[in-house]
Image (cartoon, rainbow over the protein chains, first blue to last red):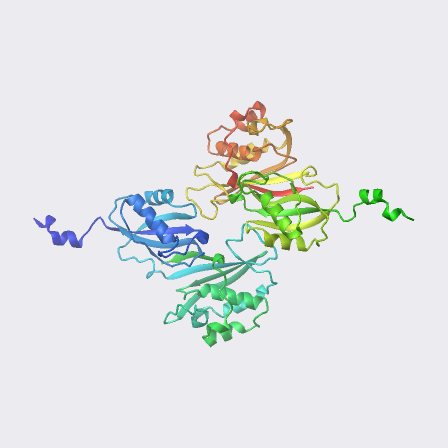
Length: 260
Length: 260
């Protein structure tokens, strides 16, 4: 009967604490990537500042993917825990008012307390955009990698398929940020051409640092004939980063979606 | 027999003088419009600087349209006269190297000496992009006008057709820049919807200052029900700018093409 005021109960049942999942779209051009850092603007910092402004309290955000400097996102996911009573509908509206034009919260959802944007992510979908043209296009410049060489897209499509499935992707891992184990599973990899635009879509259960960009760089080297047909199989087997192509520029990479 | 050195002949036949037509694409976000001015960066200034750098001499550019601050162009046209012997193929490559990333020369052609980008233009094609959504999209923010209200696009399509043909467009002319006569001919006006994007395509023989943007603002006012069905006819007849809708923001306007 006196249990209502039992401090133990209050401690274990903080009924007002909610976990909020945000879906976020951003143009990464002007940012040093997702993750908060001492020098330079980051997406995380901007959103955490907006949350602090709206909820009058600091909150820490956890994202599905720590996208690199210059990388864009259509549907990045991040979560935070809050005791604020703000309605879910108001969260995107209020945060967007406080955010710069190149970052937008497109959705806010209530998720179970156990939800973690990074650890619960089942599939991440990235798209790398190659603009295959001699001419610069001011509207694509910040959102693609312009490659002026003639590309054999049919060969790129074929070689890309070698990567589907579970493999050790050590050959496509940045040398300065080694992750162990380096086995990942690519569920889908599709190279699509639309006039001068080539889109490399990759869905996987996780990606090593710079993995999508190294795959894109390797596919372009194959497409332009700098690496011979059949290279992808050999590169994958070699587990040697020096055998693969260059790391394609960040500006062509989009985090499209995260599935849970 | 001595005619070859006759100075009169040399004067009337400057054989090395060529007229070059440039096709230009630009993201107008960071510029004070096309036309050279004392304060602020303009597209004309940037290209003239690039020409001076490449040809080691000042040249004056004449454009088909003096697009306003923030307006974009897919295929703006401009011409200049030069005695330089630079090959046509090299002009876009050399100028693009000297230009910022948000301006690109996509074509250079030799045209008759009598060619004038502005006075010879037969048809100009503009497109106004309305992004009809509650949510901000960081990738559309700089290239569209976001309208959150529900829009009756079928009505917008119908009312737009009233403007096709030759009319006095005084009602859609900026009050501070009156041009006389204000009769223009709209060859085509098509409102197209693709998911949340609404494109207002207008082709005409010429446009008054802010005319496309006033038409876009009026169509949005009709679409959201702020102006009743049948308004466009009355507004056009009234020859009164105050009867029309607002001037839509510059960032949603694209000069698509100029036909000669």
